Image (tube, rainbow, N blue to C red; front, side):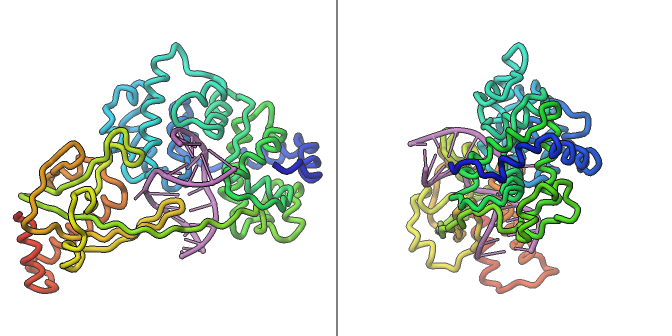
Amino acid sequence: MTRKTSAADALAASAADFQHALLTWFDAHQRRLPWRDAPSLYKTVVSEFMLQQTQVKTVLPYFARWLAALPDFAALAAAPEPQVLKLWEGLGYYSRARNLHRLARAVVALPAPPRTAAAWQTLPGVGPYTAAAITSISFAAPAACVDGNVVRILARLTADPTPYRDSATAAKAFTPLATALLSPVRSGDHNQAMMELGATVCFRAHPLCTVCPVFSFCAARRSGEPEQFPRLAPKVIERRAVTRVWCERAGALLLHRAAATARRFANIHELPTAAQLGVDETVLSSHPPLAQRTRAITRFSITETICAAPAAQRYSASDELVWVPLAELETVTLSGPHRRWIGELLAARANASSPAKHRPSPSSATRRRASAAG
DNA sequence: AATACGGGGAC
DNA sequence: GTCCCAGTATT
């Protein structure tokens, strides 16, 4: 990476003053969050897993539901995986849930949980950030968190003009400075304060410099253009398309459940793709699609076209193809988008077949009923 | 070092 | 549409 700039040197030299300003602000202005109420190692671990690449607001309802169902490491370790995945349904990045499950089983097998960042980082799903967060918060370990918030704050404090290819590269580059600034006596609060500052004051757009507790340390504020930092290369979005099949027979819906060893969606259900069913897409496109939806993930934008299965076609259940009765859809774990889309399609059909509601056309209603009857 | 993971909120 | 969020695992 680039050498340390003079701005970073000056900031590190003021570390004690910086910590005092930051922690005084945090003591007065931190948000009340459920994992800060009667904090415990377990709450910290669960919250940090959920917060990987996910905003606080999104996590809140999942965290409450999770803690109610699985209140401690022992309960999580003893839980069957389908329950764990079900509790994670809709939160995305499902390997986090499977890793957290494995981690709980590893922790309860130990005489005591590890207390150092290095030891935690050997556990599944725990990288540099999560190890620092868990051990600084729970054990006052001297490990600095470097997440997106911290990168943004440090890039602005030092007005760092370095163009970074991505946030991971930037995080690595800022780790020495974050470590130099870390409070040696309140590392957990310091780490949380930095992230709190990024989330509530040092916004990516329109930062609130006038109320910032460390504005006097900030070179970007002095420059007048704090939004110019950090400099990150723009992401290139790749478009993809996939055809899904809606196949319903005798009140059951055919779903694809990815293998436990699959890279994506291990043990998660989705509508099967035409390829997974071995259906020729040209046959499917002879009728208008039931729906077309777009989902997005990191650098991909995926348009999914959902088509009705050919009426004459028959499919057998297998390891990865399962018939799920509509009445039992709630019991399986679907991806968030497919949970939503399937609900929308069923609701639209119920609406169309209700006498009180308008029907688009008799023929389409008849076709849907025929499909439903198998 | 790159890329996959293939989610979702806010603008 | 765009950006990026309390990142990690894999190659």
